[in-house]
Amino acid sequence: MSVLHPSTQFDAIVVGAGFAGLYMLHRLRTMGFRALVLEAGEGVGGTWYWNRYPGARCDVESMEYSYQFDAALQQEWNWSERYATQPEILRYAEHVAERFDLKRDIRFETRVTAARFYEDTARWMIEAEDGRRFDAGFLVMATGCLSTSNTPAFPGGDAFSGERYLTGRWPHHPVSFKGKRVGIIGTGSSAIQAIPLIAAEATQLTVFQRTPNYSVPAHNAPLDPEAARAIKADYATLRRRARQNRAGIDFTINPKKALEVTSEERQRVYEERWAMGGFHFYGCFSDLPLDLAANETAQDFIRSKIRAVVRDPKTAATLSPANVFGCKRLCVDSGYWETFNRPNVTLVDVASEPIEALTQAGVRVGGREHALDAIVFATGFDAMTGALNRIDISGPGGARLVDTWRDGPRTYLGLGIAGFPNLFTITGPGSPSVLTNMLPSIEQHVEWIADCLVHLRARGLRRIEAEPAAQDAWVAHGAEVADATLRGTCSSWYLGSNIPGKPLVFMPYIGGFPAYVQKCAEVVASGYDGFRLS
Ligand code: FAD
Ligand code: NAP
Image 1 (spheres, rainbow, N blue to C red):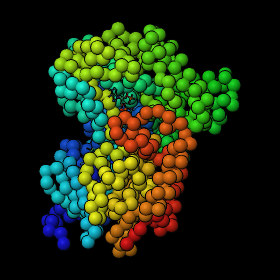
Image 2: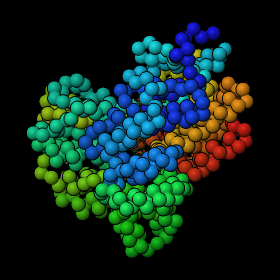
Image 3: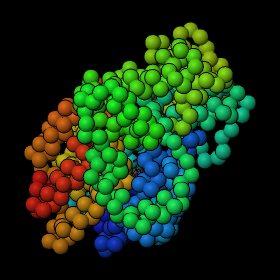
Image 4: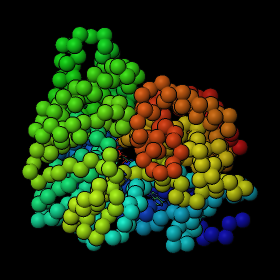
C-alpha cells in the first residue's frame, strides 16, 4: 500500500514540458484524468526553452510547425516569418500553457532521476533529484529526442580560460561576441544557423568542421499576411496534405526517378526546388533515398552550388560533403555558404587532424593553437535514448531499461516497451518522430496514448504492456525498412554513431508517417493487438 500523500498520487505523470508534455497534460485533463507534469527546466517549451543560440529557428515552416488539435488556437496565433525564430516559438509554447491553464499542474525545476514499477499495485513510483517522490498509474515520457546535449570529452578538458557556450544549453542572458575571437565546434543544423550571426558580430570566427553537411537555403522572409489568411481559411486541407507525406510535411515528392529523366530536366528540377527553399529539396526525385547513383546527382548539384558561392576553391572543397545526400539530417540555412567569403571567418578541417586539445588560450589542432576568447560547442545530442537512459527506469522485478537497451532501443511502435508496463514514450525510438515534422507526430502519439487510457478505464483494466513477440516483429520491420535506404551509410545521430560507445541502431522508424499512423490505428481497431491488457 502506498504511504504517499494524496497530493503526490496521480492517474498519470508526464515527464517533460515541451510540446509533447504540454499537449499530453491538456489531453489527459480533458479526458478526466488527474495528471502532473515534472520538468527539469524553469519554464515550458523544451527544445525552445533550452536552445537560445543566435539564429535558432525551426526549419519546418511555421504554419506547419504548430499544433492542430484546437481550431481556435490555430486561428488566433500569428507567425511573423516563414520559419519562426526560437523566441517566437517559445512565446507560442508559453501562450499554449497560459491559454489552457497548464502551469498549475507542472512542477518546474524537477528533474526525474528514477522510476520504478511495482507489480503489486501496478503503479509507478517516480523520484526526483531532490528526493521528492510521486506515484502514478501510468508514466508518460515526454523527455524529448534532442534534449540531452552531447559534450565530447576533448583532451585538456577544463583548461580553456575563456567563455564556453553549448548550443543546447544557451544562457538566458544576452551573449555578445562583439570584439571577440570566437571558435565554434561542429557544422550540424545548430552551427549552420549560428555561424552567419556569430560571424557578423565577432572580430574573428574559427569554424572547426569534422564532417561537412548538405544545406539548402531557407529563403526565409516575413510571412505574407494574405498567404497566412488563405491557409487559415482552409487549414484542414494543408494539414491533410501534410499527413499524406512520409515526413508529415506539405511538400510533394516528384514520382520521377533522377536517372530516368534527361540531364536538362534533372537540372531544372534541382534548380526549381533549390529556389523553393527548405525541405522541398527532399522531394526532387523519388529514388534519392534509395539509389546511390541517383543520389550522387543531388550531391553533385549541391556541391556545384557551394563552389558557385564560396570564392576560395580550397575552402569550397573542404565545405563540400562527400557522403550520401539525406543520410545525415539535411540542414536549412540563411547565408551559411556566403559566410565563408567573409575575411573574419576561417575554416579548420578537423577530420584529417582531430582537435588535439582545449588549451588555456584556445583550441589546438595539428600542433597549431587557435587563440580564442569564446568557444561555442555545437556538438549535438545523445539523441532519442539519451534522456530516457539518464533516468534509472526499472520494471517489475527490477530489470533496468538501460540494461534492456544495452544493444540499442527496442520498442513496440515507439510507444511501449516489453517488460515496462504502463510506460509510454512520446515520439520514442521505433516511431517516425525525428524523421517528420515533430508537431503532428507528437499529437498523434498524445491522442493514441490518451485514447488507450480511456479504453483501459472503460473496461476496468489497470495494466498494459507490449508483448515481446510484437516488439520483436516491429523492431525487425524497422530494421528492414531502414536497410532498404541509404540512411545507414554515414555517421549520424540517427544511428548513434556521434556518441562514443553507443550501439549502432537506426533509431527512428523510416517507413513513413502515413503507413505508421495506419499501423497504430489498426492496432487500436484490433483491440490493442501486440499489447497485453489486464
Ligand atoms: P523537448 O522539446 O525536447 O522537451 C523535453 C523536455 O523534457 C525538456 O524540457 C527537458 O528539460 C525535459 N526533460 C528531459 N528529461 C527530463 C527529466 N529526467 N526530468 C524532468 N524533465 C526532463 N523539429 C521539427 O519538427 N522541426 C524543426 O524545425 C525543429 N527544429 C529544431 C531545432 C533545434 C535546435 C532542436 C534541438 C530540435 C528541433 N526539432 C525540430 C526537434 C524538436 O526537438 C521537436 O520539434 C520538439 O520541440 C520536441 O518536443 P518534445 O516535447 O517532444 O521534447
Ligand atoms: P549535430 O547535427 O549532431 O551536429 C553536431 C556537430 O558537431 C557535427 O558537425 C559533428 O561532427 C560535430 N562534432 C561532434 N563531436 C565532435 C568532436 N568530438 N569533434 C569535432 N566535431 C564534433 O547536432 P545539431 O547541429 O545540434 O543538430 C541536431 C539535430 O537537431 C538536427 O539534426 C535537427 O534534427 C535538430 N536541429 C534542427 C534545427 C533547425 O534547423 N530547425 C536546428 C538545430 C538542430 P560529425 O558530423 O563529424 O559527427
